[in-house]
Length: 471
Image (cartoon, rainbow, N blue to C red; front, side, top):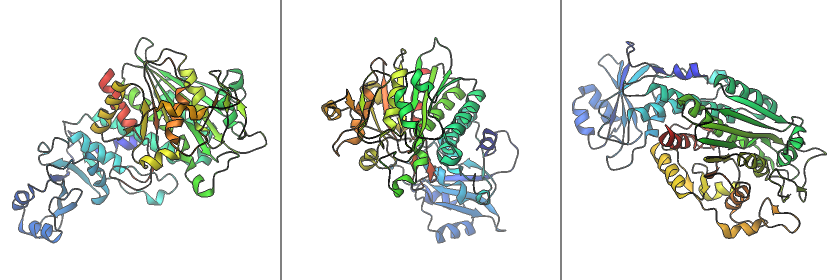
């Protein structure tokens, strides 16, 4: 969706357009709420067994049968009622314009901003290839208490990330992806540079080149710079594998179906960048996106190859389906050559993270306890969850190679996400703070505010962390 379309989901607080109220009711106050309704409405809610159960949405009709209001159950006062609940509301209502009414203050977890954000997140649909499925958006009138600029900035940014991940690889290969980023840079007045094809070898990015050289579309490193050089330096690095066949270690068909999302790390980095730029945070922001397609041809890199890296470490290749950490290694090495206050890495990196944490709870790794506490606090605040796992140093020796400085994966079946993080950490020495996120980038089963499809996980949490720290 474009910025204009996101704005179309809302009415300004001063709008005089007639809107239908939405009441939020918890279980404890349900009886007193029902007492104030008409006899017809009382009977209707009784038939519907409305008790204020979390997530239940019902309509209230007037004597003539027209919709007069809607009511949303919040659950009990002592159970955590997350704002995501309101992400399920829009498409449970008839077409029309609405506003939040009633007293939200009894539930401090539910702020009007959070409810409106969830409304916008839940309204998203990717209908680029199926226009017949487009539904008329339900419009929400914003309260004066809501920071509309911040709301639209976050939603526009998340929609950007979702759109990128959802777009199939035939329409978002490395060439088109570069053009999309170029447009993004122009819209946000960011400087952009690209190192592409064999120039990667000249400029000393041999791992990015090796991963993408078998594709008909050249690999590349895209760099964005934004903000004042005197401001704190924050660098975002995101894995941009537009499609991952597994290379010569070819994936089975079932494992290849969702590989259009293997650029989800780069989409997450761009989502955060969009939020930072939109909010005009005082940061010297740098975004590094190694973009490639892991394909097969006569010049594909092979298991057993030993490749050079930008950092100077020789890397033995155990499996060509672990290509993401290779492109990230060169990008992280570049990032680490400058003095960086905070270095973030995002990647749809390992199946091991999904086995251990599932699709909805991305693990993250950092040696900085203060950074970890800040990120975890923000994740809880905005309900964009993550879970800290350790850079467990005893496992680092599992990456030892007999013929190279390092093997890029462990030969054993255990702790695959941790060892991937340990491999990446070898390419970062100078950054004051470094964190790596092993995300899934996809919602396999619809959740409130999260339709099935691409999701720039942890983006809202990282932005909240940066906003609190630097605004």
